[in-house]
Amino acid sequence: MTTEALLRPAAAVPPAPAAASSTAALLARLEHSTAPALLTPDRSLTGRKVVTRVRATAAVLAAHGVGAGRVVALLSGPNDPDVVVARHAARLVGATVVHLRSMNPRSDEEEFAVEAQLDVLDRTGADVVVTDAASAGRSTQLRARRPGLLVVPTTDDAGPVPAAAPWENDPGECTVVDVTSGTTGAPRLVRQGHAARERLVARLADDLGPVPTRLLSVTPVTHTTAPMLDAVLLRGGSVVLHRGFDAEAVLDAVEAGVTDLYLAVPHLCALLDHPRTATARLGGLRRVVYSGTPAAPHRVAAARAVFGDAVAQVYGTTETGGISVLTPEDHDEPLLRGTVGRPFPWVQVEVRDPDSGDPLPLGHAGAVWVRSETTADGYWAEDDTDRMAPDGWVGTGDLGALEAHGRLRLVGRLGGVIKLGGLKIHPAAIESALREHPAVSEAVVHGLRDAERRESVHAVVVPTAGRDVDEAELVAHVTRRLSAAHAPTRVVVWRGVPLTRSGKPDRRLVRELLGG
Image (cartoon, rainbow, N blue to C red):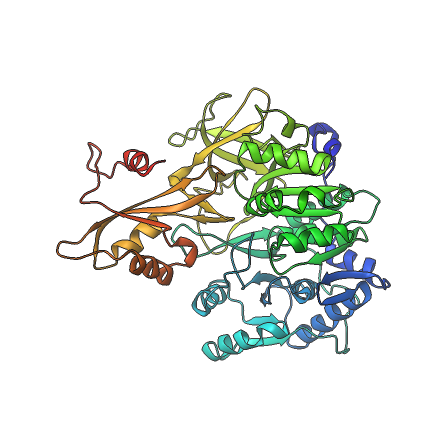
């Protein structure tokens, strides 16, 4: 997205179309292309091959009666091209899709356990899984636990291939169920409606410009980069898929012709620290977008020094899409480096009193609420009006303040939520898990930031009378109960936890004593 486009006033931004299907348009664009569209270090699919596989897989789904009103689960290896094939095949027959591999939008390294995947299948009602070759074993495990589950491999075996989507676009239809972090450790299921999704893809495509883009995705294309990928292919570009982040591989790809990068903040920091970055040929980069967690001001300045006019920081959530942007010019201003920039022209932001819900004046910190044309429709089969109101406003869970210069400054999170590499970790879930251990009588958990603003989980535990606490055992216990991401990186044993006058743990004092 160009700086000029990002700073256009709201009145100058026409509404993006919502009725057309980006899947149909994407297939029409790629149908006759013999140029590579999806590339990995060991595989390349031309545009024509992508279309063949999408339509053939859609034909298999249609033959089994899969269509509108059905939920299709997608299971693939990290950033395998077939996850893109499967998504568009399911959309071609009108089905809603949900991804089963992971809920982390920044990394696919930690795959859901079988139990978590079964839980997503049960909660969404998905009775079909489309899988690639690498995930065939896990698909077999799921079918063994759910005998009625239909497993469909991606294919290019020609059959009665549909030429176009055999369904009418319904603006209220759910296109994707995004799996994201939940308050209890269980994933939340976010309903992404057809209209909002199509508007997002259209906006991203409009801002790419006439020159073909080559996007490198090191984060899962099952999450944040999915609409970016669609936009790039719609504009005749190509996408390079890496299974994860490796600084050397990223620099190799950039020198080989990548024009656009999307990075999580830890990836950005690793790239800035890599000794080769200083001498790498970065002149071909047109966009380097980073997001996910707060970036330390000195890292913001370094990113501008290395990537110049290509760099931009974006703040957003799964429920809202992009909220605000720190432009390249903002990176130059020390006062602005601690902000997340100015809201996009199509996004409304309010800062509200966390208790009363009343809007707060400029400069006052409170709960950040957002309303946008790209906002999700709600949560799947869950009543959560405290976060997603009927009038379209969504609570981000962040605490922040709108400043006089129009930028948004984040100062914390409601409920002390810890953000690790894109995952929202709720201290209450970890505290509950720790208290379940027989050696723990009380627990208080906090997230503390280091000099790079990276957060980690710190726990204070009070032992049960007559029991000794083993830190490694508690870490393993939390990992089993929740996940490795929830496991404390530091466990401190105290004889008691300081209390407030009301008898509750004094979290502010605990945080100070821990060094926060």
